[in-house]
Length: 103
Image (cartoon, rainbow, N blue to C red; front, side, top):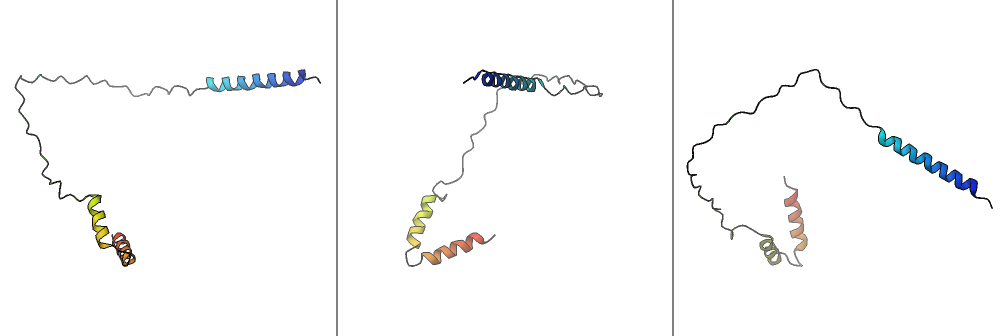
């Protein structure tokens, strides 16, 4: 069995494919043409140095929220366990669905 022809064909087709890929890499978008409008360069503003004074102390802002009054998911779970039972869970679920549906 003579596979020389087959190997030559595979080699030649591989080289052609690599050559095509190389030509794709060379294609690039041309640089954009320079605009006709002149570019104006604005020099940076000169800022006078501030006099050397001691910085005033800024009082730290304190949060005026009592953290115990903010509801957490645990609070809602405790409330749900006390209100919802096996006898009334369908009514509670319907009430929740209607509350969610309200805008």
